[in-house]
Length: 474
Image (cartoon, rainbow, N blue to C red; front, side, top):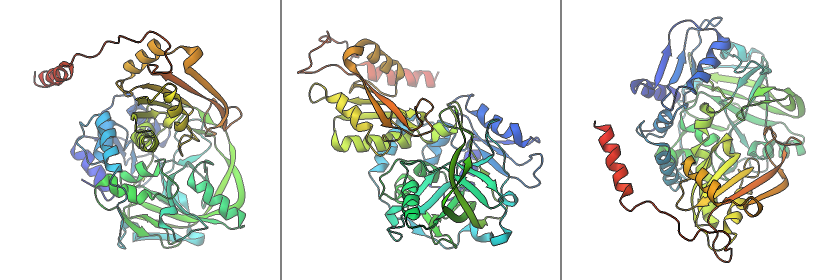
């Protein structure tokens, strides 16, 4: 089932016991973020959280942890909530092959119900803002999907980007936005500033559950996130036209904020507790001048907690990082079997692959670091054989402990690019990257004593299914 807006998804979650309404009065700080933080510590079946009785707000509706478990993530893709992580990744990969699916345009968007513009714009009137971590420098919009266009090709639908970036509220009509240099919006901004022009943007909040998934995907520059959303949904993604910018935005958004990134204007943004589990310091970031806000009546404010994993952010960017890397690698190396990029937005990647010849696995690892995502994120790669499940960490640790000779199988490449938020980078944005080849050597590489490996018995897979069935029915 495809959901056209956040509200229908929340209703489905509640029906399946995957939404918890917090009825007692809570404080905006620290209760909202602390509850979402705690949801990441109670197991993989954690529910979404709903708050509508928040001290200091007369009429707030706040949703947290919407994607914050594998059950909720499965439902976002229209799968049964019991679908395993591995099965979700495999289904994600299957649906990828249906790309592109042309979106459908609708003009009756519910966010058109209310709007303010010009001098009447006040973000604090529309949004119930609160800090997520004690050390945050301010209030953040951290689950907003931002639409921007290539100034050199403004009519090219495929070069219209939909991405998630951290956004700090720095005034009633001002936002500070962090465009990571490897991301599409940074390229759009660079081109606009070279012309001396402001860059128009549309910032959408409270979207249907597939929008945050595709907005965080490492897709090619000329691939449309809306067309990928259609593939993942199994039906066309509904979009509408934003009134100020004319951009294509999700039809079902709760709030649409339109404005302009001011050319060559920077202001201190941060600190912020990031997906790396560390605070990033204050940096000079571009400033958005907000000129129009459109919103549904009684809008829902959706936010996510992120910090030391696992949090909602990790569920949200897990499969949508694994599958693009898998597809991009397999296009050149069909021997690649599976990719696990679940950890810290893919700073660590585990790849299982067959080998054509000696040294082949290391080549796969180097290519992973030069994919569109790998340029900014992939800093460590572990390669394992095709019969090792990269999602089974005991198997991975066995392969690394039994097959790695550090002198021969660990490759360190200095002075490569990485996202500035990576806390180990020095200076920020530069790091050494590492490949650990935990595969069995093949000719002409004949090192080690790997001639007689043990294998699972042929009947083991059937017995695993039988045991699961017996346990489920006992």
